[in-house]
Length: 228
Image (cartoon, rainbow, N blue to C red; front, top):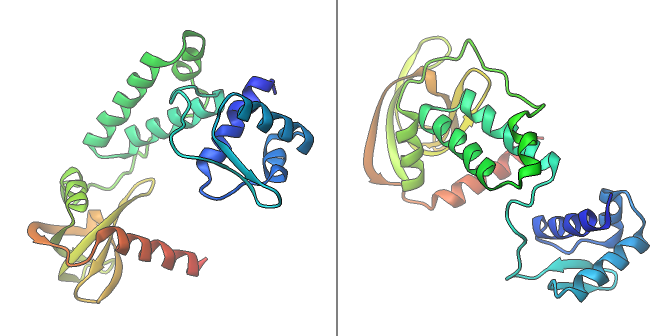
């Protein structure tokens, strides 16, 4: 790896971590020596990159500094293209259009020599030909999640038994052929997951969720960690 690329990657590593990162950890990720990392960190500091380090603790990148946002490596371009193509094939119509718009915007600002990596990308998402139809407007559902509003649904389980519930929509999970709604269910007083294709009817209510949705999402994600 060229020194310039390594310096860029060090900044990226520090930027993505909220905690101090040791020279050992950086050296392991970049497959180089700890001594090289010390020299690179000194070079970055000499270029006024605001890196703060403490012996035995690690390095952190202080706020107020950033690199040009689209100085992407080939692997990062692959990641962007794969993610955007996956969303274009599996997301609702609004997200699919947005994903293609993202690719167009990235292509417009990439350096000329990097554009072929995006146009002829080796990583592709395969379309799900047996995708189940959604039982409600997913674009509106995303808007309701952002607004923190309740949703009333008529839902049928795998046996076809129907129930009516008021839920607090929190997340949309995307599987290959189905989409899932993660919500707090007032009927069960707990988190529940609903297949969106099994929602028979939906009423987008004006009532606000009585708790902060971000905290509920954090609680739900924390509960998944306990299940692992």
